[in-house]
Image: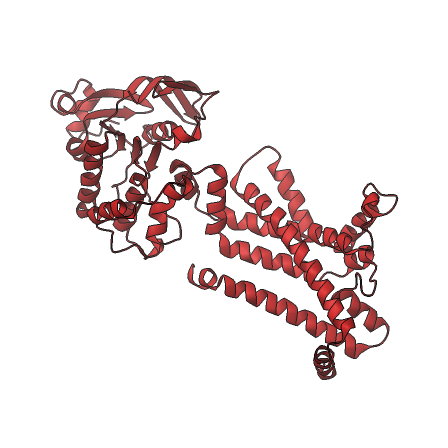
Length: 240
Length: 231
């Protein structure tokens, strides 16, 4: 098991995340569905240790982190990363952006394997280009390459394809699926598109107003949803 | 002015030891003060620009006050600190280059910190989160933010250099304008003007301007790529 969450609480004015129990496993792609403000991004930020919970426990690979002890060792934090909806790149060129995680870890740059990945992502010809000159799709592919370059054990995806065209979406889905099969990381993928969840996810979770409504494997979630709101969501009703 | 230009060229070409000593002391003092104020100012500016902590508004207000602090008051405080009765009098820095460097560092570091703070505050907050999420330590992320804001940081250093090289009141107070020891271009200009040697004073003024121009031009050329291509 990668993450085990118990009684997690995180509140902001007008919003409260409440997760009584949630397990995340190695090798799975766990898709988070739900309307804006459901708490998906907050959960991701908590999983990346970017924010402290108000209450509750998060166990990462058996190690407990509570609100008073939420800063895991650097080495552990460096096993987890997030690809955000809007790719935030350094002003430098594409290559410098991609090798940044390796440089801060003093890791060796294996040019050959990186180039293979960049070729698959279709950005191997952009290496010297400044990040500000990239299109949205190119920038997001660079952001994904930068996240995968150090082989994270946990890959958190915060609506990375929300603003992309089908061509770029396909490239990103294929790359993450392949990475998942090869390296067996825990992937948590936020999406508003339940077709995408159906394509890439192993387990699907529906959230609303900071609560988890349903977590199920893909087949059950889409074919025999348990929660009435899941059924409403899948039939296209505006349940929120 | 024409006479001053001729005089300054004559003084430089004749390798007048008096003139070259003043230029040397000026460059040494300005260089050291700029180095120390940069070492204090950039990390302080980055800290204030990137973090939130209790008392930050007070520290920021103090910094802004420091940016507009009358240099002669800084000189007075440094004078008292380093005078034989002062708490740091035992160092024996008063009327020495060290006291001038201390005063100029105090004058320049708030400028560098203030401009650096403004520059790093412009760095995308999402980028900072992203860098931490990629495994950067807070120091690594701060360093990346400084590099992202490098145009503003260069302007901060140039502003600091301007404050240091043009300073006269504090230098006069704590340095004493001693020939061959603490006389710098600005204090030499004051002295020569008082003596009625306007040609020499103008010559020093032109040399001072030329040094400031060359120093700024060098900084701009060193970072030309970023200053003119990044934005």
